[in-house]
Length: 296
Image 1 (cartoon, one colour):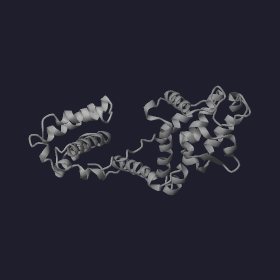
Image 2 (image 1 turned 135 degrees about the horizontal axis):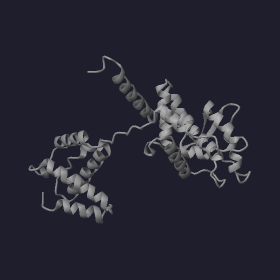
Image 3 (image 1 turned 30 degrees about the vertical axis):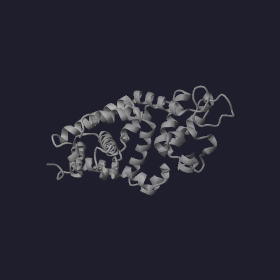
Image 4 (image 1 turned 90 degrees about the vertical axis):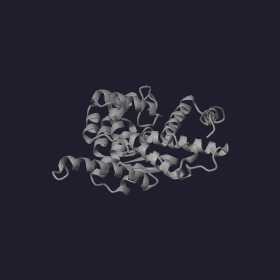
């Protein structure tokens, strides 16, 4: 391989592709590590088998995101070398079908969720609103955008149902469980939402301190504050984690995956199946700790 080919590629990434300094530096590190791996053979003699072994080594020592970036850097560089006629063929062609493995969600444990919600007192209108928010996110598994979009007219308290508007403006009904119903009773009673509302024209269920709709950013603030009070690390809790927790806990308690799919508003059951992997992992962990024949 002609001297300076890697430097030429780095310049091309910067000037022609407009990659950021951080991205270019990361690609350079990935490629330098690969060159060290194949030395002293040289890039011209790299085979598909070499790449297979190298990627396997990366997967044993790196995080999935790092492996995915390394593969992307190899694809880009070899493609550049072929385009510049340094190489006659691209040995990374077989990598086209490799995808980064889907990362598994990290749900809270049931005891942690209970501690988070139960740490909210019933002292102020904001307390009551926050309790409703947490019960809504965990109790229905709705997305944060769906939660902040719920309006008073979307509540069917007699039938214990809530209408939420999901992706693509698709409506679906989610159940209004007992814990959420109790929280709503307190929030919608005198001294709750009415103290936050500045206008009867505002029909959003969750209001901020100025009387307007609670925003997604406002939800983040609420969860951060309530996690701190409950003694739960902030980085482990979010609206999305509560959604994950809802799905995982339901599956662990025997819910049918199609029911969970409908509850979460997934267009495909394949999206919901990721939670079965989490549930199975939990089952394996408990089995390994508890069964006498599972331990060495």
